[in-house]
Length: 400
Image (cartoon, rainbow, N blue to C red; front, side, top):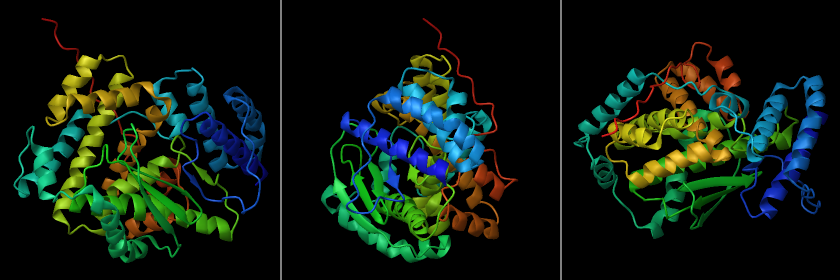
């Protein structure tokens, strides 16, 4: 695993450089943390040095014939080049980083998924208008933020046996929950190393409900947390063919975000309110994918905003502004946020498939950090990851 180890060394030095610069690092989860007492890898001198070191690894990685390592190296080079000023076309960039195309879904498919979400909401007595989200949150039972940590832990403990049975892992994990206040798009964020899992709650964006607590106990703790701990548990027992450092710009993110979002459909399908929330979230991610493509295709902000309001009447201008900026201007999010609709749609479709296939995929998903290619091998007849295309083409509003 010489090529893998060499790439991991570069990633660690790059991560330390980014942290020392005061920004987010490039490692979200370390599946093979160094032994205690071992000095840390020194920080790289600068990003250009990192780019040279990654480029120098290309011949070695190609000669080693390790597809997992090669796909991760492509992602690192593409992401760093974007950080250094390159601006590749969205589809090229997403293929290089997330490992799937950014072709999107036909307008008719997005509309059909919207109709399914509205049907689920209607069964709960909720209409489709500017008050939809508030009405659903009221049904989900709002909670005081002070109780969130305790209730997330309790929900995780309650559902953990079901999840472990479904995914086939006995890997241990140690959970720490922290509350932070940061100007980022996320409400919850999970990272960690080995069996240690840290969940951060961002009250600036998080609105806690009893149903939401169950959703994010599944998404963050028993989805990301247990899954990454399972990867680390395997790494401690055997040598693995994949890069043991997980990053949001890498090709494993479609699996991680896709399954975490859809996990309630596999674990608690009897929870009607949570199922309605998941169906609504799926539709919203498909709409975000339309905007992701549009803002990167020269469509004006005004046209994107008009489309967003037409698709989702309760989205605020602030929400629309943030999601456009994240997907159009930030190299990290321009890649990473595509993993949400790409993975979510694939796993929602899996939840609607045969039970034996579901078991095979879920077990594999907690054994290896699969790339989109790995998911396709498990389900050759499954839907195209990243969408079949063509996505809707937005029209510019008329000037009055």
